[in-house]
Length: 109
Length: 114
Image (cartoon, rainbow over all chains, first blue to last red; front, side):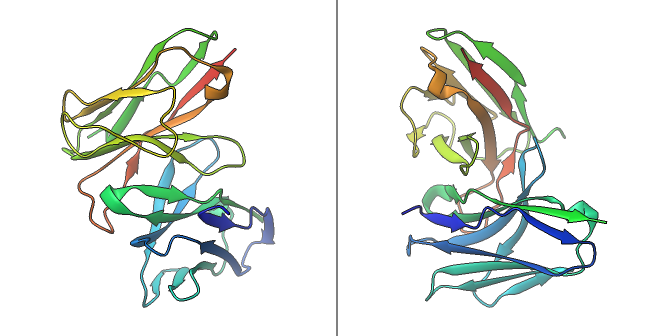
């Protein structure tokens, strides 16, 4: 079983739609949780960290359920510029990161 | 402030050739990492360093060596390249290893081994 599992998609949604991505993880020792964004042929960039209490950054909301080992990302009012691959990422010792395979999102007019 | 830079950006090797990928960061970060990314897979950690003069193995270290002689540089070497090492290689750095320290990535090196 992969350490981090994501639905690879692709998700194709119209502008203005709300879309949700889910991620499950198997390593209960994971210390920190993130969503990274990766544009085509570019490097990953941090979108947001995910905290146990849940957190929101503008149109983006992230949730963490440690008991179920489940992380989610909600994007409201999708923009064309949100088209990218979204990576679910776990942090462990020494700052090491474990990446999911990513979920592809395409927002169309 | 260039952040994290990688050289070269692209490279084509023949099986058995050797090469070194250079990663440089100007943010005075202690921690540096090398990842590879293959189609349909997440990034996988090859090697990492927790400070100048230190290196450690990650998830997929076989076939690679690394060195961190200067704090700002982290080198990844392929002694005898194999087609299975065709991949996109990303370097990253972070200030520390605290739970929510952000990793900053370089633009990547696209390597093809024929």
